[in-house]
Length: 467
Image (cartoon, rainbow, N blue to C red):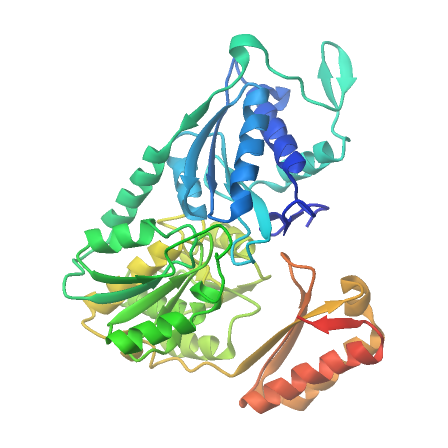
């Protein structure tokens, strides 16, 4: 993690942590970098092509304008997908010859926040060395030669060299067509509930499921700029649970603000989380012979119950740091095909380079329909351990993590649980908080373990509040 960019982009409160000037400078730098950076050995007159998408929060329009202005001011062309999902930007970047892509979104965060995610031409999260250069430029520390002089600001293009801003909604439509093409059977007769979180999929998801023949019941699809993620979507799934039960639906899917996450609800209204989705899909892949000798790539936040269930199936697994960035890197390095997070970031590497909520929903539908089963039946083989997670705001994350009394409380909690569970204390990669988590055979035991660690922080004068 750098000064500005975390594991999922440059994120913070709009016009407080992240402002329009940041967006303009980022646009300037990537426009110059992919057009004229000597390291890339571009031919004379080369004009970089950069594709940009945004979610529905009010500030996304401001950042889109600022970013676009920066890009074209240095001679690159900016292609606008408008309101779309993060995975669609990745798809368009890798399939249509773009130099890079940018998604303007703060994902599951409240509307007051926003973020800038940089995606390379392969549809993957941007390389660290480029992020380092972007941060250096934001701080006025990136040096380049212009007409023999060392400067820290990229030059403006002039005349016909100024870039163009181009409507590219056709790219989003091609992405929708790609999703539809992935379905292996019709959804006719299926009653499907969808919660789009008033976010990026407010139009995309229904288009896909309607085209595949489902009778689609959609909620939270009226974005107004400030209602994204508000009591809806994958982080507030209660509304979808109620919809599925009240309407007697077969299944439901909830996405987050930028649609790189998906959680499901079975026909009984029970939530099926990312770990359970990976279990269902990897079990099906193994039965179909498409898993090969691949392992399921999880993070350290995945549940004990998932590992026990995979052991019973004879399916191996990897554990990475939290963040779909690390999951994907492991998948590429070791040639694994499925991985993800409990929160619903699921990656099918032969189909996408990032978590894709709608794609995940399509894969779950495939498991249900081709096995002529219900989702509740498909998850019967995995039992999740009760998990308690609390986010705490502290005076200093590193100081708290290294405090001897806090470390002692972690060891004490581990000893108390023994082989009945586990604890985890880690820094968030996207928010200024620590995540305090415990799993145990009972929820009460997990709650006690978490509270004991938080109490140690409070005793040391490190705790500000529980978020």
